[in-house]
Image (tube, rainbow, N blue to C red; front, top):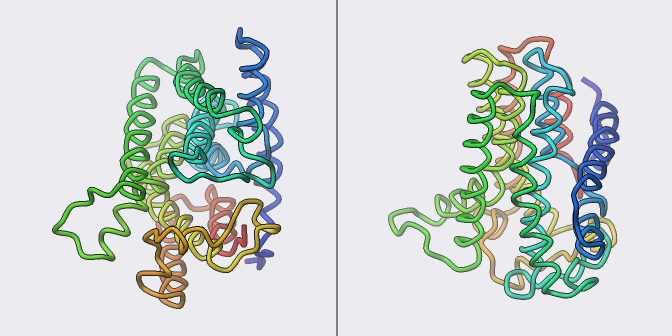
Length: 297
């Protein structure tokens, strides 16, 4: 397997992202919105981003025999949910961030009221993507249930991370995993599972993709914790070092840097192992998984 640069995503991902970028913007353009709200929504969505979640939806769909066209509505939906969460997380009441993707956050650019409202808008717009002729009625129901559950879990994880309320019976490492699996992992796992549903996956294929997504979701957040600890603001595109200053619960802060790196390696292996039943259809996902473990921003 080719060793990837830690900041260079696989070629297949870059090609998929071009299609995703076009669809995100074109679907926003179809909405009948006040000009200032459309501008804010576009700024929230189109202001850069790795597009990890929608790409996973598409690649997981292809891995079970589907096509990019089949997965695109779900891919757009999951990215709108992600962007809505970023806009609200950046607000002064939560993370109080001034930078996102190397640019001023939406509340800095357009004011807090517009940031709240643009984020609010993206939530229903996301779910409207799933009412598509691309899907059967059964697929629409399954996709809606998956995305609603993951969005709820994401909010729960954010509450755990910022306001507390974690189950008391969990030890510190278990509490940390509970935060990460909800706050970040749930939507990544959901993106993978939605792709499998779009591609008409068998039960065995769906279970393999779900296991892959669960491992990859936690891996993604541990790598983010390491990036926040070691990365520069200029390279990462957002403020770094804030987790430690804010006293947030992170993997490096709880189990140490080296143990965190070992956890990443183990999760990367778990994710790759889950894909073994998909055979040749999962080659791109294997490369993607390796890049996720090695990325530096």
